[in-house]
Length: 89
Image (cartoon, rainbow, N blue to C red; front, top):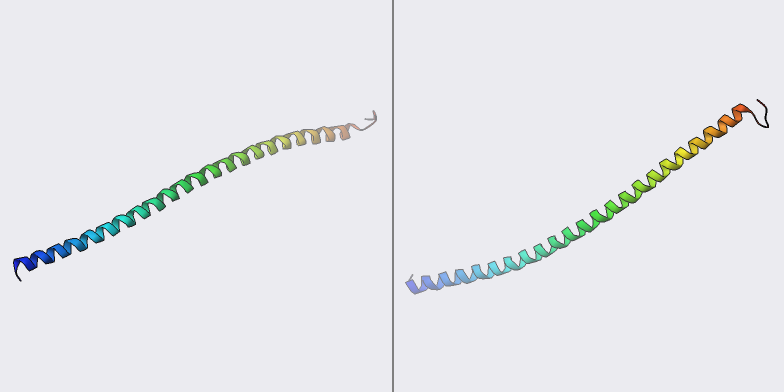
């Protein structure tokens, strides 16, 4: 093989490598865009979940407060029934 033939083969190999690298670069860009989108969606979902959890916590707190009031009223009713009604003991 002559030096010119070797040089031509090296140039062809370099051209093939350059084409492959260009395709890899395009693929990396696509994957990067998909990952960016996935991260944005994950952040949005985490925010939504945090808001839902906060709302649920508030509702549970309200329910617990209402339960305390109900128990107090029930205890008052029980006490009134134990005392008797209409002034009778």
